[in-house]
Structures are given as structure tokens and as C-alpha cells.
Image (cartoon, rainbow, N blue to C red; front, side, top):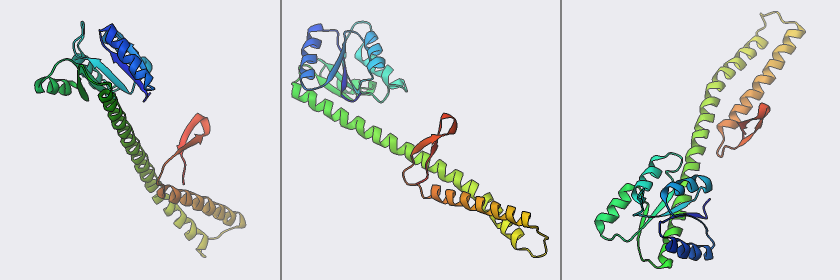
Length: 217
């Protein structure tokens, strides 16, 4: 949910104030006062961006960020670390742990909003790249299958023509009709393969049995 933020901080007053400010800007804010319940909320609401405090009892924001980035289901979530720690060493430690951005308390609301918008743009770009990679993978598979199927079908079409045109082979009307029907079927198959080989934007369509298939353009 791109417009949903998860806020994890053990300071109840800070959560109340920040949540109110973010909701006034149109965000849906889910809050938690500890990382354990915060993780459950993350799985439930699927936030685009996580705002998390560094120092909390039980589990630090650093530990939470590491767990998120190690989990394939959540590693793409954008994490903004909120902390009172200053200095280059702390910033480096936070980013190395998996935080995507770092903001030192206290901070102006305008700066946090700018960081959130930056995170949203970053996530949108990641999603476009992933979708393009998926599209190219599907396209490569379709072209590979079409190429492998096309060669034997083309050979069968050639053999059908040889049988049909060879004057030395005795052929009844039934045999000729069968060969002509076979030729029509092979032509349809070759035409379909040519359509697949021209695919630029693969899309799925319903197929029998509740399955899906790639639609030729």
C-alpha cells in the first residue's frame, strides 16, 4: 500500500504527534510502540514505507531493519531510521544495517515529508524495474518456445508438401483431402508462432481449466 506508513517508536507522545501530522497530509499511518507488534502490523497492512526509532527496548530499530532486509517478502520496504544519534559513524551504521534513509530528531515535518516522497519515488521505480524484468523474462520464454516448436512444424509442413506434390506416390481422394487438411493445420500453427515471435508486450488471457496463457499480439 504505497500511501500507508508504518510508524514504530516506544514514545507514545511522539507517535501521537507525528501520526496526527502525517494523517493531515493524507497518509494512512499504522503505529506500534515496539518492533515485535510492529512486525505483525507490517505483515498485516503491507506499508510502502517504515518509520522506525533506533533505540527501543527488546529490539532496536537497527535489528528490525536487518530482519526486514533479510526477509524476501519484505526486503523492498523503504525504511527511514528516526533517531537522536548524530555523527557520521551512526549514520553509516544505520544505513549499513538496512535503513534506506536516516533522519535525526528533532526534525522539521517538511523534511520528513520530503524524505517520504523520495522513498515513494524510489519504490515506484523499483516496481517498474521489476515489472520490466518480468515482462522481458516472459517474452524470452515465449520466443524460445516458439522457436523450438516452429522448427519441427516447418519441417512437417515441408514434408506434407513433398507428399502432396510427388507424382510417383499413389493418392486417393481421401489421402489428398487428409494431406490438405494437415497443411491447413500446419499453416495455422506457423502463423501463430509468427505472431508470438512479434510479441513486444506480453499479456495473459484466460485458458481452459482455469489457467492462463500468453496472448499473441
